[in-house]
Image 1 (cartoon, rainbow, N blue to C red):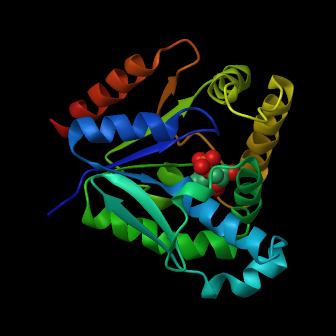
Image 2 (image 1 turned 45 degrees about the vertical axis):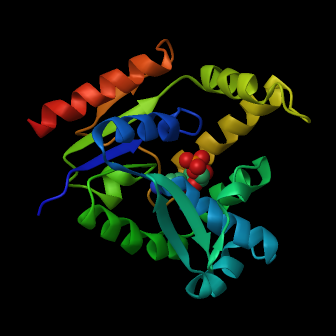
Length: 221
Ligand code: DC
């Protein structure tokens, strides 16, 4: 049976994951967060001191990343360990950004991403989903927002937590990751030609969910 594949790409902090999760729940699809896979490898690189491209390249063949879907929620397994709760720190974000520029790391994850898409109705979010992983997706969405808007959303989220970095630091971090993601040689973040761009800078969460759900329903008709 042909599965429905929706690609959602965009920069860090654009809300891809939370929006995709909400839309997937509405439609009964699986949400695949590919960033979490790169984060798992970033965590491995921190733990094993192999962040340098040559170092991660040497060990990538030994690293297993698997996704499990428990009640629709994605769990990420790194070499058999559920690391879902350890991959959202700023340190892991930066490590993920670095390892994701290494071709051998991308190749390692590509087959797994394609396999999940072939077997399930999915909304897959990342940076290269429409351009590389699912070039024939039923719909490609580029979800974005200004760097300032993304930084202030992140700041509001972290403000109540201990050690919240200042807004300026969050903004700098986002700009650095945008630069890394758009300037790497392999699978850089780009707007696929046939993608629908949704700029959420001045939109509320529910508004974005409704807009994307409507776009998906249109292609499923
Ligand atoms: O979406 P995220 O912030 O969780 O992604 C973590 C890092 O992984 C980010 O720096 C970009 C990278 N990434 C990628 O290169 N390709 C993807 N398909 C998804 C994420």
